[in-house]
Length: 430
Image 1: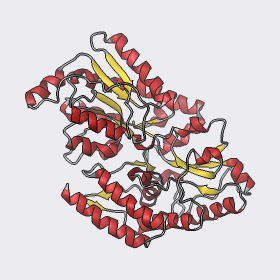
Image 2: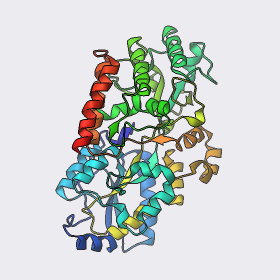
Image 3: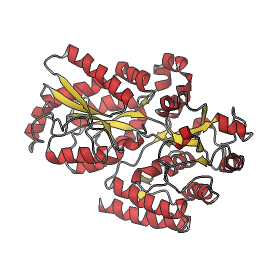
Image 4: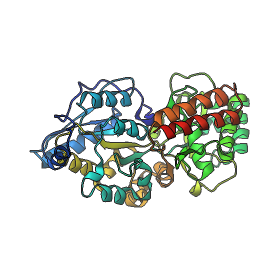
């Protein structure tokens, strides 16, 4: 199952459970809640591996804390997890912790008054920054506080089908995919040889988060790690952004990527020879695709150890309806401890957002070498900007990108310039 941004539909996992109590209106209530201990409820993703990790984590906690029992469930069904969480905040019955909070939705949940600033705990800031290192700062909100704990990432890279590449006469050990020119030439060989119908098949649909899996990884690489918006202003209508967009326009114009929506997994099905995805997919591809992986391309051949990409992170947030926040904070730290992060890595193959993952879990990567390249890439990831109106900003960008890049109905440069103007206005309105 694809976990793109934690915003895809999830299966029914029961009724909306709550930690109990209301959000509380006064600072006295918040102070009392921060110290209060007792039973809490948490939600996690419906991904089978994450469920398995979550069950053992909860069992370990409950065995040692009989008076502070954690009740866990998969996030309830809905159009998207964001919609479900937003509704629970409005109803005042969100759980204490959700281990599937999309960074793009944090500003919205914060605006709803639904999140607890983790800095309100005496060791909140130090715990987050000691665990995640410098990368943690990308997750600070505009007011300088942490309303999310950076939890785990799936650094986006280029998977390629070795069988399809061999059929097209392309080197499968070191395929020429480093530069845009190389990538385009390789893509043309794949399609011309009928090794695959298309070279790569990013989703051409218009959901706001789809740009995280086509434009944004390459933009992060091309710019050395810039976000879509920085210091209150759009960055993407730069020369770098226009180079990335023009590359993808060529992919669509030359029919190396498809404008048609695909039902299923085009990479697994052999319809496409490549995919833009993170390490969670390795388990999905096992026994189905003989794959290799390389960093996303840049216009000039950057060394792999300098390339940034999109994080595809999911984080943990504490919700303001929680009464027993003292317990919730302790559970959050327990669940993101070095031991539990190691179990999470072992169970899911996803990268804990902690510094020095490759060395901290060296034994795991020795035994599972397929994942080692992702541990290295995890040190150079770019998150979506943590700004108000985040989703509206991304939708504005996607609308312009779809019209110009995917469907060729507008000049690429003009479309990016127009989107930047609109987005700058959204930023000013926040």
